[in-house]
Image (cartoon, rainbow, N blue to C red):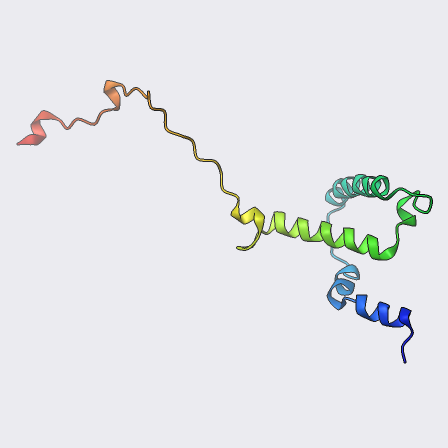
Length: 119
């Protein structure tokens, strides 16, 4: 019979997520450094959000909580950069401007056919 910890580990194991975590994608170093600084800021905000006696730095954040935030960052990134039909980003439509009721047309805006064409 499995111990509680073995059962819990098996229940929380996500093969797809483990595969993503172990991927080594080639990335341009300048882009990676730009994105890494933003993620570092997110880590600091996560620590501030979870701050307690046990959590003083990002290293103190439990692995399952780190996975939750990492999954959310990956999911949000994919949704923002590659929206699908069901995503919130894809459903956002730009605001349509209301036509002005007092819009004035100028004589040069009217289309008038030349007199000779009326035959």
